[in-house]
Image (cartoon, rainbow, N blue to C red; front, side, top):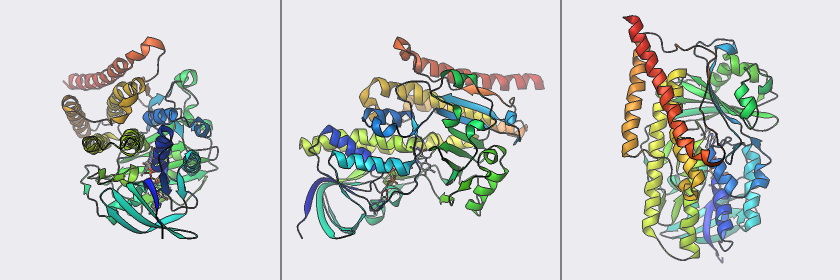
Length: 491
Ligand SMILES: Cc1cc2nc3c(=O)[nH]c(=O)nc-3n(C[C@H](O)[C@H](O)[C@H](O)COP(=O)(O)OP(=O)(O)OC[C@H]3O[C@@H](n4cnc5c(N)ncnc54)[C@H](O)[C@@H]3O)c2cc1C
């Protein structure tokens, strides 16, 4: 059997695989890429809401003809119903509407998006084998030989580079026993898709003038989070008919005997969720145990682990596809230099490995802390505001201004760590005190506060980091002032 030779073989045809292929082929049509995808038709998938970095990456990729078919994400909303009241006036909200700007994001029906992206990769020159699976493999350093079984034949293919983009089925981790590192975060998730639900826009949520006046669309088309003591729910409109709803919880805080039953029961009894999807039809709920994990090596001997085959942190504020886009921003240049320019650069690959090992580990740590304050409006919105200062003020802003900044994931450096540790120490202390004094939820219901992120015009754009910093400090000082006032009152 004569073997077909490629520069890069990619296992899996999901977003990681196709976005990498499109990026490479747009940089140089000389790349010879093979994508092996086992599904004849893509199923419903998670990864439905984009972060600002994902949106920036996708917009720079020049695939507007695909993006235009998807729901425009209008922002982020976090709703806290601390007293479990049945009136929406009992709910407090931390809100981050998306203003018109270069990074406006999307909410995807992934079944549709993945199909569009694989067709785009093929149009640009990638070879697609689908439905197809690996029948046998022979991995040597910088040389892989595979027998691929398609519907009609068995073919032999080989390449220097092998990219595992097989998602959570994690081909290399299982087939070659690549090790994982221990993660500090351990969560589970359950989700389903709902159709024929009430329109969130008809839903009795107070209309905020701020959204109406400035945001790119109605608050109902934002990614909505319902924050509870031991976890959180997402609600994402993914097309004209469907909402995606999911529940994520920390395995250390909550142990559920029958998660699927729990999921449907909670929706029925939660006043806000039941008013939207109480009467809707839904798909069979799917449980994902142990959501976070992380590989020890992101690249070794010509094998690259991309996306979920390597690591995943948590769905909160959508870092999933974002970190895939960041890997691709690096891989595009690294593979170009290696394959097209034929210049090996071992030091840069080693730097890539370290960059993402730290990037994922630091995110896990940040998220782990966040689960501590989930259901408390004041504490959790403080954690969010701090995160949004780091994210929007330092990261998104600089990635927007400097093209290559997107390559570096958010990490905690030495100086950040001092501030981070102090802030978390204070939040934990306030939480413990409030719990002891039975005043964990002591804010006025129906409060709405805003993250303050927007893209101002002209030179004012340089003010973003400062504005986000003051927003964070302002919110934090307000919390401290409240604690101080309480002390004073007691005396
Ligand atoms: C609860 C939860 C919520 C999430 N929400 C978000 C979100 O809102 N936003 C966000 O950005 N991310 C989110 N994510 C993460 C996001 O879903 C993933 O990061 C992303 O879809 C991973 O893309 P991928 O290309 O690595 O894998 P996938 O998209 O899963 O693609 C893998 C592909 O490989 C194929 N495949 C698998 N094994 C083989 C094989 N042996 N041979 C051939 N083909 C194979 C599969 O059929 C599939 O098409 C969420 C994740 C979870 C768990």
